[in-house]
Amino acid sequence: MATPFHPSDLKKSAKNITMRFVSISWRDLAISFGPIVLLAIVAIWLAIWFIHPAPPKTITMTTGPEHSNFWNTAEKYKKILARNGIQLNIVTSEGSLDNLKKISDPTSGIDVAFVQGGVAGDLPIDKLVSLGSVSYVPVSVFYRGKERMDRLSELSGKRVAIGVQGSGSRVLALTLLKANGIEAGGKAELLDIGGDEAAQALTDGKIDAAFLMGDSASPPTMGKLLRTPGIRLLDFAQASAYARRFSYLTELKIPKGVFDLGKNIPSRDIRLIAPTAELIARDDLHPALSDLLIEAAKEVHSGANVLQNADEFPAPLAHEFHISDDAARYYKSGKSFFYRTLPFWLASLVDRTLVVLLPIILLLIPGFKLVPLLYGWRIKSRIYRWYGILIALERAAVTDTDTPEQQAELLKRLDHIEEAVNRMKMPLAFADQFYVLREHIGFVRMRLLNRS
Image 1: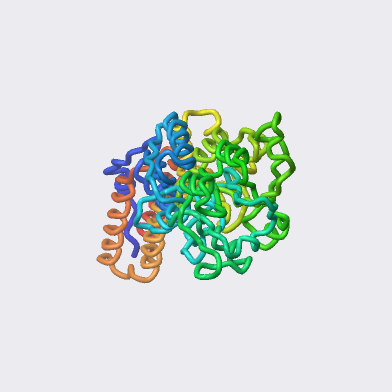
Image 2: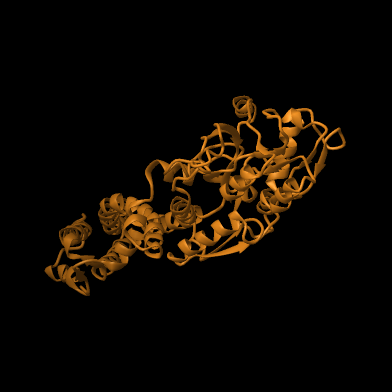
């Protein structure tokens, strides 16, 4: 016999209603945002890991002897970089070869160096890149004699100054002489002197020829030697062949009269060969500093002179060192928008900030679409969980209510379900589903009470 239904039993379904409706559940919203926030944090971490940090305020450059051409050039770079708050420390050296040895050593602290082409040899240069060539370094061979010479092989058996130890001049001179069958210990006497000392020794007749490059082959020095009776400048008849044999060499032509139009010095065009001086950096140089150094090179080296046309340098001429990706990008498209329009420090900050923000933006755009779905699913899952418990209780009512005690136990369990549901915190947007759940609880209660 079923327990008769009494209206007072329905009052149970309305007791202990402590339900709180809120406009939004911040806890559920926070949990819904959790995966998006986690992905954003991972994206930021990866961005910071892969991008360069802020550019350092100090870089170190090795040049050459104090007051040499490279040293004077570095002093100009120093003033230009200082405009952007970058301090350039200058380290003197014996010359290009010494510069290359220093920058090849990762423990030397050298970031940038001027290096003449043709001096790499067997040195480890895999961690070095070129920011571009900045000037020609002509190979000027002056000699004493009445007869004109146009080939290096004619120096066999003579006293020849090839440059000081550690200089690029010496390395290149030995390479070119060897290609002509002249080596140390042979017929020619190769002397490790260079610069003004070599020029003076040639003037005084103490040597027969001298290789002068870089500082020692400056236009004033060349003009002075060409005016000296009995001293001539070797005209490289095989200049084209040298340029083909050695990729770092370029064929140049000195026009007649370029040093003295009135006296027509030189009296005829002279062919020379020349490597280029390159701005070499370690491959981990900050991209912003790479741009600044090339900007400085443009300001210092872009003018016209006896050996080059205006805007011929700096140039991305790949020889022994490959052009860095940052330098290649700069030569192709120039500085980025921010570095063109903002102060250097601010442009660097904005540039790095955008790199960090970009992955966040890319995640948040789909994230804003996904969060409402996750939020709704979380709220509904709370309601659906009680539906699962309610269905299990209703199934038990069909099979386990043979006695009044069993029916009372099920009603007690239903009371617990209703009390728990009534204590839920529910956003107003889901109030309709809450009340539907309560109706279904009432429906199950009526079935329990009216079961016969």
